[in-house]
Length: 131
Image 1 (spheres, rainbow, N blue to C red):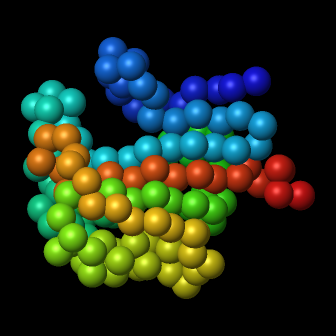
Image 2 (spheres, one colour):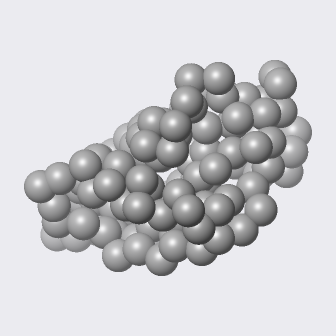
């Protein structure tokens, strides 16, 4: 059975998506520092490291609804709007997951909505599924 996750009751369904879903012990979540009122990057996302942390915290909140923590994240796909952000992103990503273990990760440079510089897609495994 699939459970769709939307802890902030954000307007995602009106855009044809949900921020997260849990099915068969797997939890899928996306995160970006996007303001749906302005359709732009959130004002508090003042730098790539801050924006990265905001994305990761959003994912953390979503997966918590399925009983997971950041330690249950096994894979992250990262999207950056410019390759010059890579080093700043890596530093903020590592800091969030320190002292490890770190999830598997791929990073791509792509266009991202609303002037966002970072968008993340994460997969976690529910703790009881790990047993």
